[in-house]
Length: 152
Length: 310
Image 1 (tube, chains in turn brown, purple):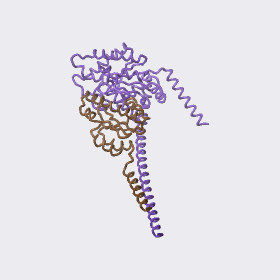
Image 2: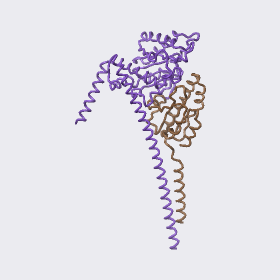
Image 3: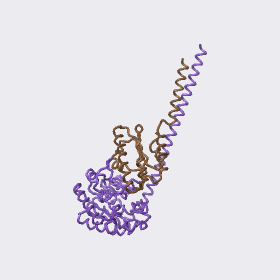
Image 4: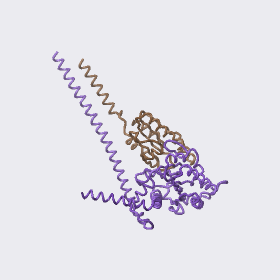
């Protein structure tokens, strides 16, 4: 009997340890960003808190981790946004604000006769997983999104 | 029985040993992960510090330039200047098109001065004077709304506007003229005055395009004509005219452009926009305010010397 209990305990411990080691612990947003930013076509700028607040209406104090990066070329749509927000209500509001910004960005780029950039925005999607929200607008969005998905 | 019990105890002992080993391995993994993160953070800090050094070098250059420039007018120390610019621009609104959008992104860069960090940008690519009063103005605090609504929410003391370059292409089309465009600008100014009556308005003129991209319609002579008409109207509107364009010269040099057309790069923002706005702040700050900032800084220095001596 004792032997059986010990064997069960041992197996559970091995599974638990193995799972933890295999990445159930998600990577930090800054390390995910560091791994995908070099794939960007242009120069990305990590935007200041005041910009995030004024543009998206997001109070960064409500986020446990975040990065809002955009191309320094106003004619490029390239954007990477990732944030974690534990408050479900605020997360809904903030992800909604990011979603709303897509319509204007698409219109801006289409009016500027940049149809390829406008198409990138049109195809972009704000994704939520638990407390994690992300948006990638880029030619490489497929590869970048896969890295994000695998890391969270 | 004893033999069996001994076997069970030995098995238990071995299992505990394996368990201990598992947790030890996990601990080592966790430590390695945390060390990796620390390395990443250190690398980021190192990069930032490198950027800061570059920024310091740039600031040194700017300071030298500033000292040279201010010999023409009021001479103010760089530390006083920083305070003057901060008090002049902090929380104020900058309204414009994609050129302003580029400036708003520049403001988030580490090399951007502290006084630019709390400016509120209302910018929209492909936006212009004709659409300035539309309901779908620049995105602000998560909403697409009229720029007047956003400005009413911000309630700034000063608003800096740079619009018009996107309309230069249309000036060759029938029904479009500089006069009509200025009339549209006039409507916009009236609406702004009605919405934020106590705010001072600063109209930044439009900047040239590169010589290579001039066409029969989109040309620097038209931009100059528009700016002349705008300057004349600013007096009538009782708003401030800011001559940024002449700082660029007759044409936009390719080395100051991000697209070899009309958009500006970091060099243009750093070497043309910032000094122009800094001069503007000094020119529009009363002498007694500058004096009180100087006095305040001297008192701070005296206090710190006394503390150090004590």
